[in-house]
Image 1 (tube, rainbow over the protein chains, first blue to last red):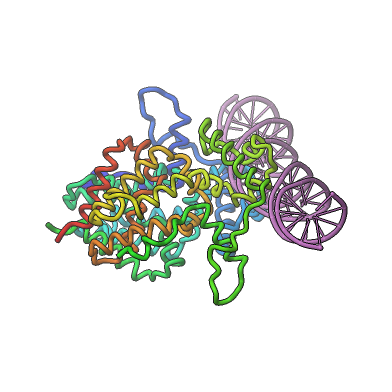
Image 2 (cartoon, rainbow over the protein chains, first blue to last red):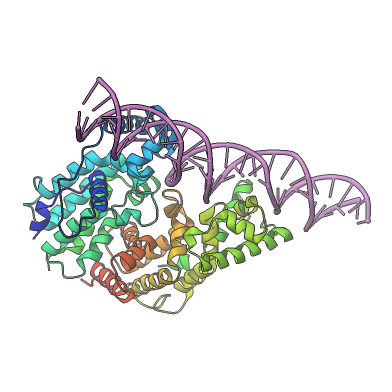
Length: 227
Length: 227
DNA sequence: GGAATTAACGGACTCTGGTCCGGATAACCG
DNA sequence: CGGTTATCCGGACCAGAGTCCGTTAATTCC
């Protein structure tokens, strides 16, 4: 199990969109081009992209992520607003791009990294580690994650990042010989790791990170209990 | 168990806000006034409120709920935009008000109605019925529900309607002598009934309503399995 | 190096949710 | 009734997300 996934490329916020863009642009019927037609970004575009990301990261660090406006970022980066939206699509896209590096390394870790997160450990332990890592991520980047997920209704779920998580959790559940609908259970489990919910539990319900991890572990344990 | 809840008033989108408003306005320390100081709405205000709701309901029925703008509603109702926002706070508030009647009857049913949704049936069955009823509600009012929940981050979770659901599910779990953190599990279970997710499962994953109900039933069954 | 091509730029513009406050009016009182 | 007051009205106004298109400048090709 998991073999197909183990060789698949990492799907992150940024490159998924770029790949989609490339594939959309290419209409040659029949033959899949794949990998060649990724024409290099123009130098000024790359420079601007980097500047925007750097400036945005700084601003988001200084103030509440939710409060930073697109105008503000564009202005501080010394570019026009159009440039922002061309590069990142919308506000959420920019926020996702800020999370991209960490996102890649997370996916790298649970696909190919060391146990218990990566292959090697039994699926139940991998799943526990997956949730714990996610909770840690939310602990650090919570507000940014919320800003990134706070787009049009359902956009979050349709996005490739959710698809990657879902595929991973689904595979783990199947490996652990769970006998129900593994996809459905994946949705439910990922629902427990939605940043909006976790922040609510942390801030409104005053649950501690340890408590949340314990609850997650208990949940997984109960669902995947050896029979 | 559940005795306290069984006597509590129904908390719905609309009256919760009104109560909150009243209680905010009243600063008398010590004595809780409760129930008297709800000064009647001025006649023109009541008339406008009704008109707005009627018009909004019609518009939301005609087109996609997501596409109806506040200006459009105000204009069609022949009132100023300010009037809309004064009555309902924000867009989500208006959407919630549209769902209010059904919401009340739902809460009435699971608090005091006939089994298996209401008291009488064993908690596990009540929980299954709760989810099924919710899924049916989403089937009918999905887009409106999404529009109503699609507010500021975390607003949905902080709202009294979520609190009511959470209290109910928590109580059921406790009654069924679940030995983990009942509040946490309530959040997880309610996460499986979030309208955004359910619509994703219905539309993107092409799951049928029956399939969703079956999955919900299986989930509850597995979590509350007799030991 | 210079012309042609085309990607990228940027800021004016639109659209929509939400706020504000001077004016209108329902409700209450004598 | 006529006056007073608290409530409500409504549309001008604001802010921020996202679009459009005429202009600019990398890149490419001779």
